[in-house]
Image (cartoon, rainbow, N blue to C red; front, side, top):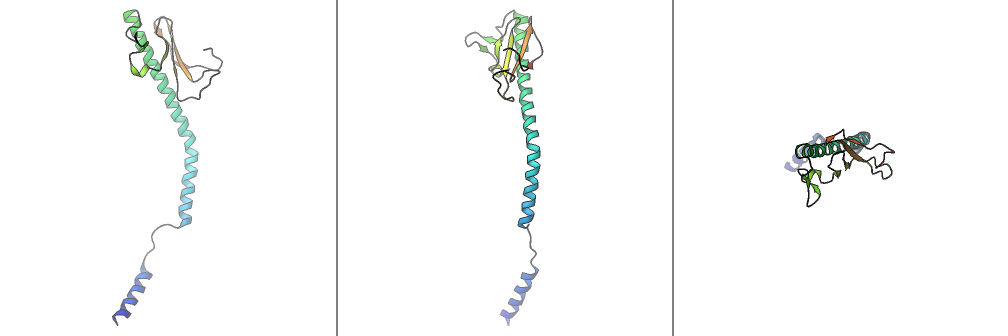
Length: 146
């Protein structure tokens, strides 16, 4: 008798078990929706990352120009900006800045956020000095001379 009762209880338990989880169709629909949303948002994210890299390039170049300008104005030379033995800036953040820290000089920096354009060099930001004063840093426009 006990085995008969246990079989009846087991069959009732099997019928009362609630099925949790999602079907394959529901899961595929969610994956498809996430894929569409990702595809729509990824180009925007990439553009914003490139803008941030460009902004970092301009900021670094502006800081280097200010350091150079301070050295030129206070000492009359670039001895506080440029290490004479390595001929590179003292500050390690300016190590990729190229150009001359001099009166009426020019500093430049390549942006990792722009595609390399060898013909027009539009991936290079530069800042010119008028006397010892740096002007606004900006990227070269197409057709600008190097």
